[in-house]
Length: 238
Ligand SMILES: [Zn+2]
Ligand SMILES: [Zn+2]
Image 1 (cartoon, rainbow, N blue to C red):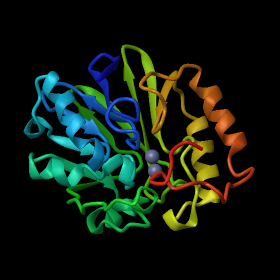
Image 2 (image 1 turned 30 degrees about the vertical axis):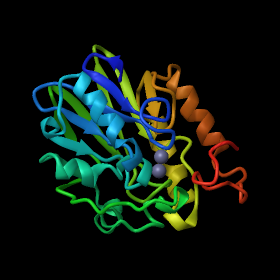
Image 3 (image 1 turned 120 degrees about the vertical axis):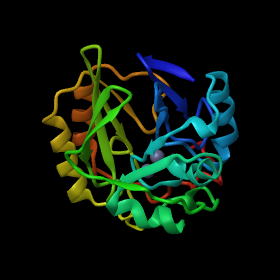
């Protein structure tokens, strides 16, 4: 686990829990909350990490899902078996999480099942979540998937954007990506003020000069698609 700011920790990721895991975060405090929870493959490592922090799975009160993909949320069903953690996600990615749809959850890229998880509440554009005293604004940023959200918060005067796969995420019609939506979402993010950010698959650290990175991502979006991309289960070296 790596501390990013105040009570905000990165718990999962390809260098922390499993090579296929997306970044997941812990907001420590009275109601320990995760933003995403990583994959089934990384769950044991996540639990070990939480334990070193003094938490058991049952201490986790809720999980805010950035979107319904295997690398971000396939550990949720296991976590629900061992806790009363409530899952919140955008409506447009809800069904695939509840059914474990292998295409829409992107599970086919990893050749692993997505254990269906219970969705307890929905995230809506404009929501402001109070998580252990920090306010997280919810922005619906579809494009990578229809139900992708980005979160913005502030720690000690520093504005943080949690962009997840809205920045540098993959594109495929099978996961219902939309170039048109994605362009609009990036334009929407560029209108926001933020100083630092994290993405779904960045190293466990803050990205500084974040606005410039989002701007670059916007310019790069859709220039060219790679039809030869290898599924992660065959190789992640490409
Ligand atoms: Zn991802
Ligand atoms: Zn994704």
